[in-house]
Image (cartoon, rainbow, N blue to C red; front, side):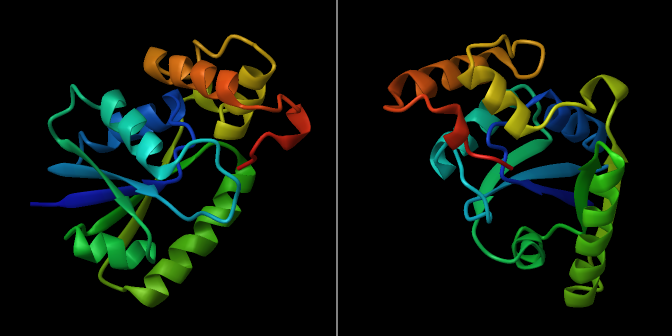
Length: 171
């Protein structure tokens, strides 16, 4: 059985993430969508909220399992008994970052391969930062995120004390 590990902060999950996961799961016996709980960036949603949003996004996909993690990705990958790390590429600048990460992961774990999927054209502009900024300005994100994520964004923003767009968490 070949398992793949799709790590990310997913703050929030959007259709670009969903697209990569659904394409990857066709190639592997299992896809583990892994929500990293300590990225070096500000987050809008807690790890538990992000995991719940990701679980709901893939509720109809029996070959996709969702988990959280807080260690080196290769260590979490090994712990999950996955042989492959899946990543997505949207734009040229993603390639440089992902290339360096793949090399670092290979240095740490030669037995784990990295595979990058190029996003479909309609998702190239979507990032979690873009989604959050549009949502904070009361824009329509329905073409970017699943309905349950749109509702979660609306509820989260409504509970925030300060709607200062300059303080929107960024990727």
